[in-house]
Amino acid sequence: QDTNDASPGEYCAALYMNMAGLVRLSGPGGNYRGALLTFWGPNIPQPQKVRWVSVTLRQVVNNEPNISSTQTVRAYNYTETRVKGLGAIALAVPSSDALLNNISDHLDFKLEIDGKEVQAIGVHSGLSARDSLRQCIANRKS
Image (cartoon, rainbow, N blue to C red; front, top):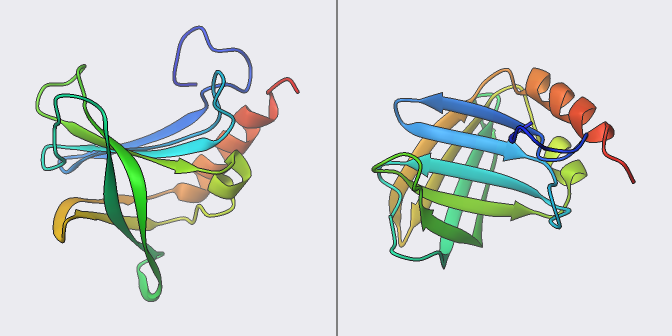
């Protein structure tokens, strides 16, 4: 769970990090019943205030370029205040099921804003993370 005082099944998260930055897959929490895919990195814009941006997200599944997708969506862009020098992009996912059902063992992500790549990061051991997230979210009280 992403916070110390979370109720069972709330704020479940898997976090990956490397020198390129961080990516977090997270489930519902508080009043938000959806899920989030959040990226942090030094090349992500760091605005003064939270803003909406149009982001192109490219995903490659299990290192197979023919199993890829590209979509352009609106996302939140903000400056991470807990770690100096990182911008963040948070993409809303409609539900935790939608998030869980689209996790593969290895995912590569590339994010572009205005045609410029701002983040490239991969996720490994995704099936293990998916199973842990599913178990955590299952503890949520209806």
